[in-house]
Length: 390
Image 1 (tube, rainbow, N blue to C red):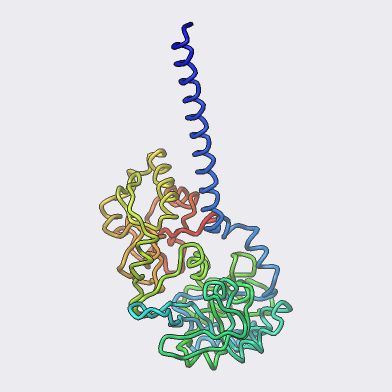
Image 2 (image 1 turned 180 degrees about the vertical axis):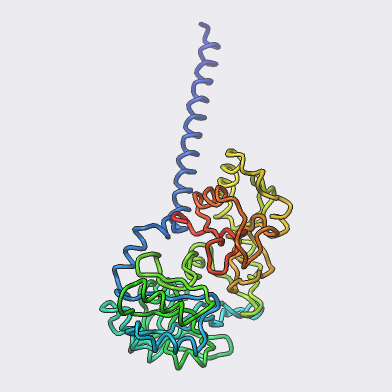
């Protein structure tokens, strides 16, 4: 072999080694990045291990009673006066307009609850500590909310309009049912936290007899009963991520007001992206959800289930990001984060029995999307990302 030939072979070998090393580095980096995304987005947020950890921490002996639309004062009294009820706490929820510091988008919506402080602390149990006193004296933040706000006990939560609330405590997220903030019932009334969204009840007697009595007292209402540990958080609407965890994973945006919750343009530019995925074509979603949606659509196509999806109808209904609130949405809609998608909305309107093929539901769940078809007020076209355990 001539010197020139040997040099040529050497160059080819070196280039091959470099190419292989580059490919390996790219693969390893990609694997690390995907693992980081899965971890940061809370994969396993709805897993059994997570829910059991929360369930054993508190609320022992309590049962959550929930009805779509919440409870009237008269309904709360009926439940309270039942001989099957040993104790009751009405959890009143809503949103606080927290000041953002931006003139054009001055509000950050914060999911909050108001409770009778002593009764709620008793329902939490031994883990509550000084919770009753903290609720009475000011506002208590969940750990996730405190991190988002960069606040701690002793600070102040500033509301749009100038009002300030003393932060009197920071507690584990589960203790507030996943809500970002909580305060006393009296203070909450002045903050428009008046609607009893769900009830925490300590029942007397057998489970079946208690549930039958609740249905008798609340005729015509669709009721849901939960015990601690069945979901990561004991709260209403527990099939999806609490708003605090949505913000933690996908970013918190500023809005013009609670009634105009469209995200500010800077957040949109930094977090939303358009991409072409199988079946649906071009979609605009949160960057972190696009891989899961693409994988779900790929699996649907491989299983030949894509023929069951009306693509034109689904695209009209909104693929991921949407500025249009839907019937039954708790504003701000998760579509504003670009983490929800509608499949076949015309044949699966909200509030009626869903017609979507359950094989589609199973594939979507495999990729972290919870289905709205099992909600008390069903939304059979709605899929919302929650992570593993959907």
